[in-house]
Structure formats: structure tokens, C-alpha cells
Image (cartoon, rainbow, N blue to C red; front, top):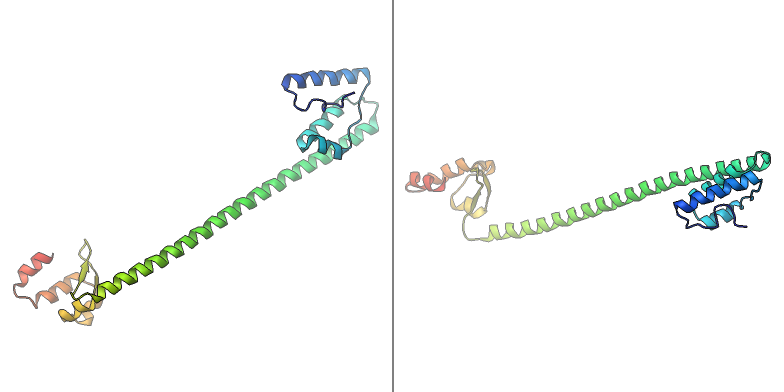
Length: 193
């Protein structure tokens, strides 16, 4: 005789309703199959949800006069539900741990990429600074707001800019100092504004 609910594991909803009716029939007639030992249920069903369902269905068809069997089955069902809850908790903890590890790995990769990017930027800046300083021309770099961003030593020596003015990076002071040394200073200032 097939064991309760295990004879057709791939049964659809209609088959399951039929099985439930068969289970109640068995109960009315006083026939009831003992449950499989729990390790066999796990082997055959492979999942705690199905094992809980199996024992719950067995409990439904178990005659009331089989008190000891009912108590054993209820105890087994409680253990299964406890194991199921523990498995869910462990799975949630493992999922959070994997997510944390993924985030940590992503953060490490981001930091590594940032370090590599900063290193590449330093190298580029060093090369540009070398080219900037080695040119024969005096250079003053001014941004769109009129602030002096950079100058090379050639610019300072060519226009005899004092250290006090050079350290301010004030474009107006630098222009005014240079304009005093140029013939036609007003035309010069109009051109470099």
C-alpha cells in the first residue's frame, strides 16, 4: 500500500485534493499507516517543508484512540518545525553574511581602483609639472574666474615677481606687477583681462 502522500510526489493540486479525500477515507475506516522514520522522510522528501506537511497530514488521519502515536507524531512535528525555523534563521544569517562579504569585496575593489586612479593622477601631474617647469617660456595659468592657479619659475624670474606676491596666487596683483614693467601697461592689462 502506498505511504501517505508519498506515492506521487509530483502530484498536481487536483491529485492532492484526491489524496486528502483518500486520507480521510482511511481515517474513517480506521486504517492508518505509521510514519516513516524521520531520516527516511528527509531522504525521500529532501526538504523540511514537505516533511512537516507529511507529518501534519499523518496527524490528521491518525485515529483519536492512538494517543501514544499521536503524541510521538506531535513531538516529531514540533522538532521538525523547530529545525525548519532554525534552518530559516541560519539561511538568513548566511545570506546576510554573503551580502556583507559582497559589499566588503566591492568596497575593497573601489578603494583599490581609487588608489590606482590617484597614483595615475600623481604620475600625470608629475609629468605635466616637469613639462611646465622645463619650458623656455614664462607661464601663468589663470582660471575662468581670473584666479591664478599656477606659474612656473621662468615666469617669476622673467618678470621679477617678489616671493610675497607669488605666494598669494592673486592674479590681479601678478598682472599689476607685470604691467608696471611693460611699455603700454593699460593696453597690456586690457589684453590679459
